[in-house]
Amino acid sequence: MIRMRYLVITALMSSLILGCSSSPKKDDDAATGGQQAGAADQRYGADTSGAASGDPLTDPNSPLSQRVVYFEFDSSEVSAEDRGIISSHADYLANNGNVAIILEGHADERGSREYNIALGERRAKAIQQLMLLQGVARKQIQVISFGEERPVALGHDEESWRLNRRVELLYSGQ
Amino acid sequence: MSQKLLLLFCLLISSHVRAELTIDITQVVDGATPIAIAPFSWTGQQAAPENIAAIIASDLSRSGRFEPIPEADIQPPPQWGQPLQFSMWRARNIEYMVVGGMQLRGRDQYVVQFQLFDIKQGTQLTGYSISSSKAKLRKTAHKISDLIYQTLTGERGASDTHIAYVTVVTDRGGRKSYNLSIADADGYNEQIIFTSAQPVLSPNWSPDGKHLAYVSYSRGRPELYVQNIQTRIAKRVAAYEGLNNAPAFSPDGKQLAMALSKDGNAEIYVMNLDSSRLQRLTRSYGIDTEPAWLPDGSGIIFTSDRGGSPQLYQIDINRFGRKMKPQRLTFEGNYNARAAVSPKGTHIAMVHRNEKGFHIAVLELQSRYLTILTDNRLDESPSFSPNGQMIIHATENAGKGVLSAVSIDGRATQRLRFKRGDVREPTWSPFINSN
Image 1 (spheres, rainbow over the protein chains, first blue to last red):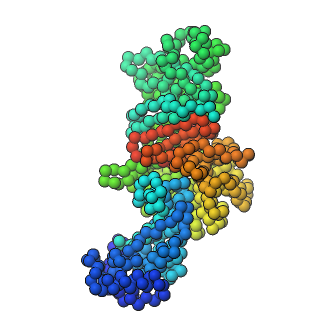
Image 2 (image 1 turned 45 degrees about the vertical axis):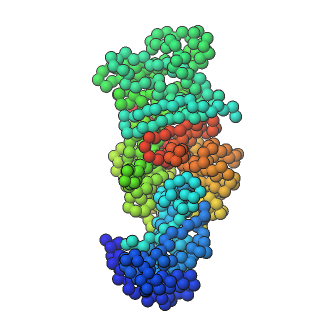
Image 3 (image 1 turned 90 degrees about the vertical axis):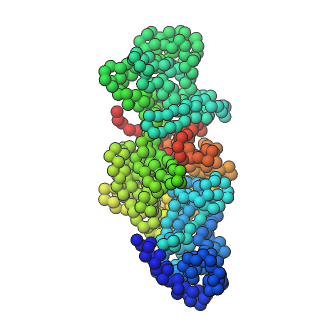
């Protein structure tokens, strides 16, 4: 039920977002550039997805289309590049107070399961912290960790482990 | 290191209850005591309902302390009730021999009898007659294994105990089900006591063996439950904001240690199970999780990365409930986590990382000497047998989660492979006094 409501709100917000993103209040280079490019594409009809046109959340060229952040082994440090992406999401959330996000933390299979759950939580909280600093309201963000319980890559090798050490940014209703 | 690597046993067993498993004894030691288990005499009309001698031989072999003599070398087999030809067996260098029989005395009333002989001395060391229903015959055989083990080693055997573990089965549609199961220590008689489509983890036995605490994501996030094994009734005991993880019953069963992140990041708390009152034990910027009690309840070993990498720490709790400053226990390597404390409190098993992977290691608390027991790439979740002689743990084999057990001297290992799904997080029950 709650998810449905967010979906409706997200759809309603989509008309306002164009205006927001073309004149961003926050002064963040990466986010501003990315969002402007995304907005421009939509304006000229380059977004052929057909769904909720004008919504940067569904624009494949928007930085908001990046929904996964990766980490080094036993680390919750966010790379400089990912900070830019997170900043774009934070900007969007700060400007759309009714949109909610789930930060889902994960770890690779190595080491102990419970430690990995705590590690996944710390990764998600590292992103949460960056978002809060950028003015996102605490109630917009939900943090959950699955540790190593929900891998996306099922191999037992470096490449699978790299893909599994992640935080997924899940917008409610999507 | 005079070890011989060999595949001694490969018993393909299909239990009458769900579980299908294979036990491979992958490594045995030269020092194991040879023992002859003669086939148990049976006078019934039909085939014997259980092969008691085979169950005993498998139990003793898995303990790592005994090397059962193949049945083909016990010819002609001595018969229950007949005088034993000591001189003949002595001439064949057999040191110990078990002779037994089983009779059906009434409807579902069996009597299993055995004698353990010291062949060199020409004497009986022990002997029992045990009544059993058909359903309890395996348990009766495990009891006999434990009586033999205790007579010959002076320590209590752990064959008549249980293990709990989690299996993950993926159906054809890709849907997962997480099953919390209990089985006999040899993997037989599996019973699923809880199933969820969401992750289930960290089972922990109450000291009386009647309850299991565990983490379930059944409501979408990690919450702690305590379930009565007999009635299957589960009670949610912790559902705070954030993590509700890593449950560990205190030795008196009245408290549950856990990791909660309601006050920021993962910290260790102890909950009084009667009042649900919480006491916070740790306070650090790092992760604090995976509490394990010392057997006298005087302290808790836990994993913390407060020093930059996951390491084990000990926090003492004095008799007024006052907590002391945690002391770091592990210094070798950059990853030591998931402590399991031996029943006597002398050893700590853990997941230890070295250049070859994640292994099970044991720290002797007095000498602070660390021994690496396993050499697989992805070992985790160690748990001591209640007599402290074996450690069961999870590992990966051919892409699947399997269970493995290793003697605490690292000399005997075995692998328990289940036919279906991934198996993980084994935890050995305490001694359970029951029939």
